[in-house]
Amino acid sequence: MYRQQIKQIKKDLQKKMVFIVGPRQVGKTWLAKEIGKDYENTTYLNFDRFEDREIIKNEAWTRKTELLILDELHKMPEWKNYLKGVYDTKENDLDILVTGSARLDTFRQAGDSLAGRFFVHHLLPFSISELKGKKEGEDINRFIIRGGFPEPFLSDSETDAARWRAQYIDGLVRRDILDFERIHDLRAAQTVFELLRRRVGSPISYNSIARDVQISPMTVKRYIEIFEALYIIFRVFPYSRNIARSILKEPKIYFYDTGLVEDEEGVKFENMTAVSFLKSQVGKTDNIGVRNELKYLRTKNGQEVDFALVKKDKIEKIIEVKLSDSQLSKDLKYFTQKYDLPGIQIVKNLKREKSLGRVNVFRADNFLKGLFM
Figure (spheres, rainbow, N blue to C red):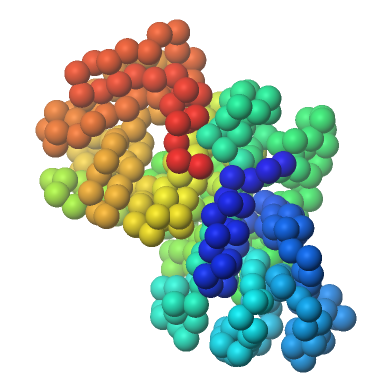
């Protein structure tokens, strides 16, 4: 199925290298090959294949290549220096597209010789806004139950979607995590993973999980950082700038695959909206170059709003997510009045949309369709 980022990626390839990063099985390789169809001579090389690995090491792809796709390149030792050399000495008519896991993205925080040579595009699961106008995108329950990963989302049967997810979980825990970093106690890491599936949307206490698993809080934190680096989960941190008493620092945890959430429908719905908001914010950053972030609000007294859409450290909107309750959230009303912020309450099961002062109440599917990407 067509992905909305294709047009911008094609434009960016004319200027620099492009990195496509995101979760495993979200469609990065498919997207790269789809872009390759627009070139007369595309070379696709995957570092996991022995034959391709030798071609990559020796830079032995055909000189007629117009688009070079390098998949799983992060598994190559010193891959960044290698890629810098390829880019700096390439022919002017050679475009380079690199796909792979989150590790392609990690060097941005530390500075690198590749700086200024690439654009990054995050490929995340399908969202209602990306599929608006398409039959599959009209069913919000499909996103809540199956998540937005292409294979389970587009599957003809719930059974096949469930089988995909079982294999996906096994691959995440047994292969991806161990490939990423040596872990001495895989069972403990798996237990932390399972606990997180049941604590979605609540501030996470490393100490509490550590007591449950009988490991140190620092080990819990490290496992969570690994899950995040592999695009299994993402953390949403509280916004505190200019918001008095919003001092709690515990992040909330959400899964990129809503189907992994083990909880009631309301929590699954919140996770689905979190993925949609994150995708929108990250998409703006990738395409426009202005930093957009997803935060939440919570005071020491326990007043909380689910999400805050932040642009250049300034809140643009605060959003409360409800499954069925159309009554205005007291905490949302508090923050909108005290800090003069525009508030949105989105409700999955809502008969009539309305405006209540600084707060607008929308049907969830209507609001989510209007998000960027």
